[in-house]
Length: 241
Image (cartoon, rainbow, N blue to C red; front, side, top):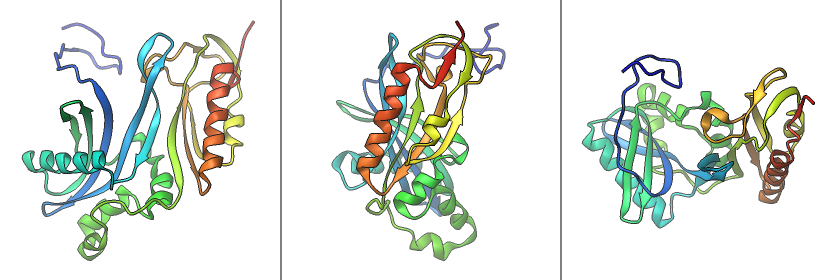
């Protein structure tokens, strides 16, 4: 085919895939000699916005002791065994449907976003998937000492995507308002002066991403409320008249 792919490559193809209705999760593992250790379970925060049905607002960490998390972990490890993945990091996405978990994809890599989530994972559990992956290849004793699943969380945190409800030519950005929030430990800006901003309807339209971590869940919740209010107000940027 002669179509242009969204990310730039040529020769796009059409893939027909079963429509999965449910909640999408991420189950991150590190394996060594066929022993799989869960480093984090995440759930996507997807909601309707700007006329689109599944805009991604972020990712939240899930405690591994709940029935849904336990089912996801067992299912994911079965997928890794079926694919004969015995060593290294994996990033698996699973849809929890009304009939149970269904695999979306398995990636032989660590959780993405250029590692911006690592301060969050370390604050929540005391270690990260990257740490575990290094141990899996270089320090068997350290890997063996890691818990089978993440321990009880030590802090509150999540990844938050920044969504635009407005469109126009950007005269200036005001992301410093996000940086000044108490729980924000990382901020990626996808929008700059001179750009045209569109209403967010998919991942390509996100105007930024931030990672929030704090010992007090009330502080985290308050900061998230501030971010959502700024999105609706359009106060993260100034549009040209």
